[in-house]
Image (cartoon, rainbow, N blue to C red):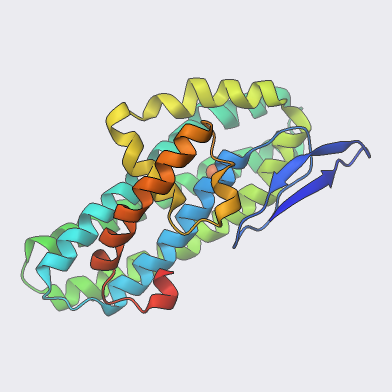
Length: 249
Ligand SMILES: [Fe+2]
């Protein structure tokens, strides 16, 4: 769904992308579709990994190896996303605000990222141990399920806070030109050309068809994404084979 929004000052804003699960899409002059596309994929993965850690038998090492590789994709993209925000987006916004409540929102964004990092590490360690067939697999799986659930809850709360309050600051203080410069300088450089196909398919998977056109990069990239996602979907069915289709849809 896309919404044409009206800015708080009454001027029409650009069309804002609103995806399933998204908490807010504040009105304004910036089109932050790339941000909302990433958040959609993070939310989808949180549901998938929560269901998979609960349902995958502790002894199915082949499946845990696939889950470990898939976790590395998710956590790698999340790390880059937060890194771009911490080194580019929040500092630029902080420089434009006059302190007060606006600055408090931005400090909260950084603090929430810091609380998420150790949980990501703990989950990664759990997937590695189960993939390696370490002793005590049942206990490891139970601990991992707890960590993944905690991560899901914290990250979902963080994404909601960011969409509601930090993206409102984006629309108040930044221009579309600022946004595109941030992407060029702080987000895109984190990805090597070799990583692009997997990340593109990861973004497209489960995305409403109209939203594929909002992926930054143009029609050739969109066509490539639609092509790559078929193979990605086949791999997903193997990786999340114990997850009920509703959670994996
Ligand atoms: Fe974000």
